[in-house]
Amino acid sequence: MNEFFRHYAEATALAVGTYWAFLIAVSIVTIWLITGPYFEYSDTWQLFINTGTTVVTFLMVFLIQNTQNRETRIVNLKLDELLRGVEGARTGLVQLDWMSDEELDHIHAEFHKLREKYAPLVEDNLALVKKEINARRQERAK
Image (spheres, helix red, strand yellow):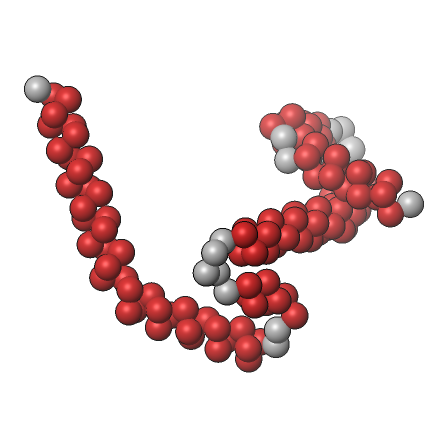
């Protein structure tokens, strides 16, 4: 059953994120608006669109959340694999998922200090890259 739900959630998330799904939704709302005068803008007419959109939204929240959770999990696993495969990387960061908010704040502060310390070096490297790109462009222009 779980496998069925996973496939259904992924397929639905992909389908509702398309241009065609948007056009269908706009068409339904347009038809509903056009039929307003015919139904004399009755409470039933209004209830129809309100109920329909509420039910669809309610169900979509669960399907899209399932898909998003799965995507996040996949990305995290891929990043964990990259951390394990890079020499010198701190493989302890693979365990970030299990750390408390306080531990995450501590690591965030550590990275902030590293950024402040090494940012000038990175910016200098970027300046060198820009100079090299400009030199190549001038060379091609000749």
